Image 1: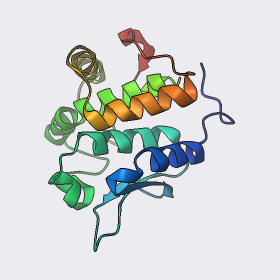
Image 2 (image 1 turned 180 degrees about the vertical axis):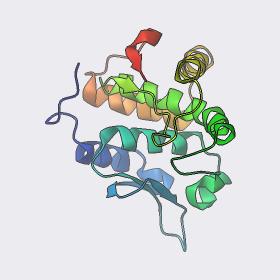
Image 3 (image 1 turned 45 degrees about the vertical axis):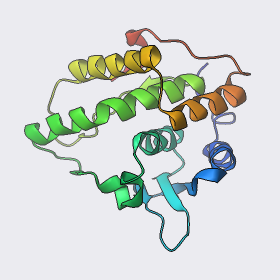
Length: 181
């Protein structure tokens, strides 16, 4: 299936997520200028902010949430390092290292949503690093998930997306060539 703006509305995904994960004290909210995870404060739920109305941004930010452990979910942006666009080659290599698993989960979520997956190098103003090597690393992480199992919240997410976008049909490991850079 090709992305269909009428079928793949981020508002629908937000509603699905918030209903499915209502027991997790976390809400998804689209429309932010920048993605951000706001840790829970004073018994208020955590908020996963995705960028604008981009469906893929919501999938990506949810992938980070699915990986983050209990301690990380108590910190804004999970306490992770982040350098904005224009990273040095060394910073870009660190980005590749920490983004392998989240982007592998995002790929699985895209499959479950019947969407093509595009790898994010997230360094448009200063490209550095090998995108093809990073794609192989993400694909290897995706294979590991298929072989050894997805994290519990990611499994719930995949099942939820498959019910809504694939009429319940499960996902299968894709060919690496289906991922564009």
